[in-house]
Length: 255
Length: 255
DNA sequence: ACAAACTATTTACACCGTACATAAATTACA
DNA sequence: TGTAATTTATGTACGGTGTAAATAGTTTGT
Image (cartoon, rainbow over all chains, first blue to last red; front, side, top):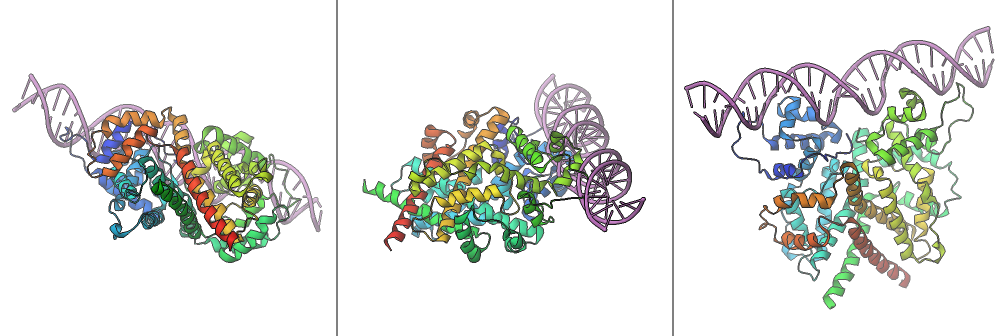
């Protein structure tokens, strides 16, 4: 599979599935299962065994229908993945506790941390591209909560959207490395540190004279955090980004 | 395929392949092709037809060997993908022109823009996770160039590494949306704007009362850039991040 | 000359997504 | 109340995937 581009499917059909707005009284036999059962089963498989384990046959079997009956509920696998995305976005609906007491910086930090944890809990989300932005109810509600972090602090609507989207983009980029570590460790039992140690003899045979800065930096970072520390990069990048946000916000409030 | 975790493979074997350090005089028959031919063919297929078109059989056929002969050159498909990554990183070896005349901010901007363009040129790179950091010659040389952007400006080695890694993470997160747009458009002929227009009737039936901020923001951003403008988010986030970097650098230089 | 080491190929297996044809069930309408 | 329309459910089949295993052929070192 891999690419997950539906393309030929009707975009409105997907939205109807997401929002549960199918026609009320239908003619044929009652469906054996509900769409939510199928999506839930698919998410359970992905969470516990990874995205590779999610096949249409496997999902059908999990809910007790024949392989091809899957397609009476979902146009194609691409749509299933979109539905899975909105399904797991459900916890994002609720604003974090103490939301009212926080300033924008604390709020953006909480949002970023929540997304970080989310992707580590559902790393399969990072393993595919959607064909379009997911406009499901849970996704939309999560966006509302995130936007509220930067509401009423002097930014215009465009800046609010850009701020939240840029923040999310950064989290996605940073968490990929952490998710990769976790995923590979669970699949193989070998951590990045184990790997780092196993290749050290080879690495030491490399001629570093063309890479003097890397050699200097790599020696020190290697001692500090081996092949890398994704969470530290996340913390670092987040602080820089928020410092930059502060400058912009201060400038806007002064004007 | 999808996940691309080799796991069982010897990590050192992969490094030997990347650095071309296999044993010199081997016993059996001469190989019919070179490893570089295989990797080059795979990249050509991925660039022109997407990652899905890259199958072991297809690559083997492209270089003129039988399907299973592929595995005499590469332990498994996961290793092929790692090799492809380092292969396309080759242009990153050279520092951009006028490098010497730029300050750190201009340099980091150039690095970020080069990465942005790189991912748009090889969007398939974003479609899979590597099992480990790629320690190939081209990747390493690119890292050297990137590090040189922040060398000698008062940062310690840890901060240099974190700065470059965070910058790259942000670019990856931001470019994913642009790559998705491009990819889907090429695959289906439907742009995000077309899609946005096609679902508008449905979107207008949604009750937005639970999402007041989204409604306010979405109305304005929708008129400004429809469902989204990835490059604008990239520019915005980059400026905020660099503003934050400036604060840190100024603080370090003062101390 | 011969054994060891290596490359190359063929066959085969268990999967995948899904097109297509068909049967069974339910409702709407005559 | 029949009967036609519509929908769900299923079975079969096709062309694709990665790669394990067995086998044959080629080159080199002894």
